[in-house]
Image 1: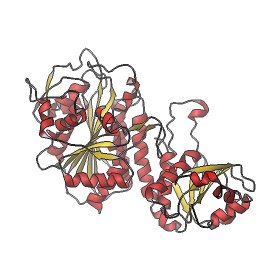
Image 2: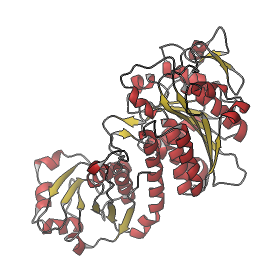
Image 3: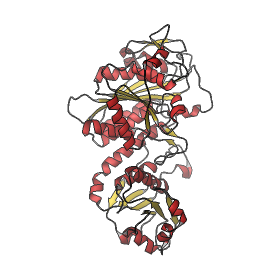
Image 4: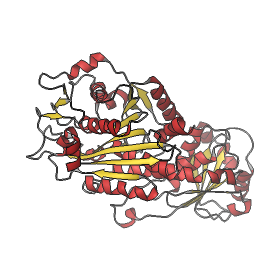
Amino acid sequence: MTTVTQAKFVELDLEALATAPGRVVVFLSGDGPLDKGARRVNRLTRGALERVRDSEGFAKMKPGDAVELPWPSGMAAEAVQVVRLDRRASVLDARKAGGVIGKAGAGKPVLVVANTIRHGEELALGAMLRAYRFNPHRTGEAGEVKEGSLTLAVNKPEEASAKADTLAALAEGVFMTRDLVNEPSNVLTTTEFSRRLKEMEAIGLDVTVMDEPELEALGMRALLGVGQGSESPSKVVVMEWKGGEEGARPFALIGKGVVFDTGGISLKPAGGMEDMTMDMGGAGTVSGAMKALALRKAKANVVGIVGLVENMPDGRAQRPGDIVASMKGDTIEVINTDAEGRLVLCDIMWYAQEKFDPTGMIDLATLTGAIIIGLGNENTGVFSNDDTLCKSFLKAAEVEGEGAWRMPLGAAYDKLLKSDKADMKNVGGRTAGSITAAQFLQRFVKEGTPWIHLDIAGTATAASGTPLAPKGATGWGVLALNRLIADLQEG
């Protein structure tokens, strides 16, 4: 797994600023005098910070923007990074500023002079997240893993240090999700995916891997139908975290784990098919969230269940027009084999309810291209049968800065799934594609089970990066799910 550069919090040592290696970061606000750390750097650099503050360019900078002073005279550092940030900046502005620090300082020693900044721990989290680099398959210098360090000089280092383990746990969870989503499919097979999840028993999770014979015995023929054309065996992995009251019902997180999606017999166009390594993004997010909960020893009971399959066009592959029976017992006419994610989810959602009787359930999936047409890459589509749970999740996502937008459900959409041959079709046509996908899944939610479906097709990856993630997998959802669990079970 990609290594997290963990944050260290210390008292500000003014004398150490002159000899600090690597990079030194200081903050300037829009008004007010320089703080003592900035004054020291300003003296060392013969007034460079004052010149930056008084420049036209600084006046145009937004919170979190930065300028570089390379090889500053009077200092051993290779660069001083000057970040514009108000001393009472919001949590999200602090994280954004941290992202700027982490991007520039990845793999290098970084000393952040944050003694006057509120939310120093959020600065640290932003820096940790943005320093992520996925390069295990690159050779030469590009593939080198460079060890960096992240030290923050703050006013109350003991208080900040007490939060360090939680910060690291969150970053580890996000990194796991990113690593899984970024891996190529010839590496991250269903077997390798399940092996990596099984390894999390070392951090306290109970992990069970169910193979095809057991899935067949359970009646998961909708899920098994998706993977029957692949050489990689279909699997379901159950991860249990039992940190709450003994015997209390858990909350369930459900993830679609299609390790590669060709579309099956309903073959996708060749252009862009290489991106379908990310079609296990829902399972990746669930896995990362479970890791974060376990590492921070959450006082909560949570079960994460992921369905791992590969959708390939083989002579044994599922065909359009096939009819399969779900674990619930409902029959499904497969109109389009490229609408396979819902076939995976419906069986493991039903299993979760039958086996664990959860207090609530959230499924995550890179499910439809239609959600990207509707919401772009800024927001995940949120569908729910329960206003209270939905509001709680939307609040958690907003606090964590992870875009989410509620979408409608309704009986009129449900009619589009009517089949003449089976209990339902797996698609409802081109119109309202994301909504009919959610309507399909809702048929596998028991009466009285609060449920949310998250369509993360637009947010699981970023074509050009985000303030807290480089190009590629974002890890969207790990922070929001962690906060939701904390609000529901630990508040």
